[in-house]
Image (cartoon, rainbow, N blue to C red; front, side, top):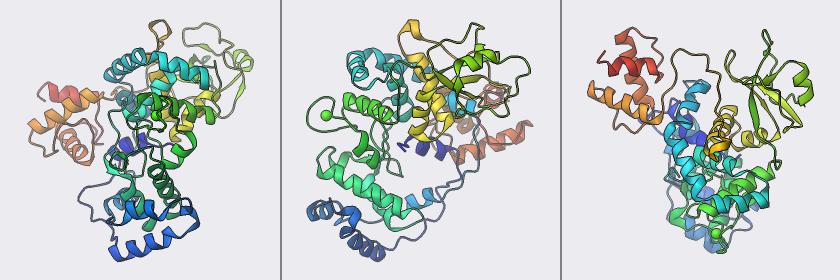
Length: 403
Ligand code: CA
């Protein structure tokens, strides 16, 4: 699992409150645990000097244990993810990045088979084109998670991988920061994923997914290639279903030859026949009554980046919109909602309106956290709207109108 964006957005939809008391992380227990790890098999490739340099003055960070234990309290519908992850701002930034790095992206495609617009789509969803890398010390987070909490065996492997990255000199210690769970760099790789997939594309001897855009783009492509990406195939396409088609058994995993889908009456969204660009595909219907997609092997590689169909679909949609002008194709079927989600700019506007109404939600940063959700609930109740804490167009419209 590469696993970056889940850390950022899932937090926005979770019940992690800053005021929650962190679970105890006793410094003496931490020190004894580190001493034990130092001599264990998982750390055999780490020299005593590397281990000591990274851990001698290290204190545990109990706040990551709060995040490890959080329970989701709010399930975002797929259209809310897409509203944030594929907003106008990100599409514009993606087109800029595509044009700026096209020579490198074409070379990367020659080597890996992965199309330039797909690489840019992943880059935009994972790290906002290198602008959101996460600021937590990986060593501190992973050491804490290796010694306390419920997934210690997994995090010990990632901690050892992080020390290996430092030992090999790919990333400077002060640059090795990321999400609470250890995803880092412009690709938001976990350290173990880095060791398997990171590439030194610019040839300076370091696999630097933090500061080198070419390294980050080539590493993303390598990850997708390792996951089974097929050169020349699209991720899939939006389709139109025949009237009355039963989508209850739809699954991207139940793949059939394209001809079988033709016989079942499916067409492209504009009614034209299904192309032969995919040998086989599964039917993905993220929300009943909304757009439907036939997706192939390459969609599965996007899925493997975050183990989430919603994120894979966000990458797919963004990749459709950031390539060359003649290749752009957006989804056409509307999502089944009368209250669409908000872009990042609209989230900031909503927060500004909430601040103006006296809600103590900090700054208008566009991140809908638990404080913003509480304020939204209060306003929804006052205005007689459904009190679900969700940031949507209806509430924004009412507050804009001074409601
Ligand atoms: Ca490099």
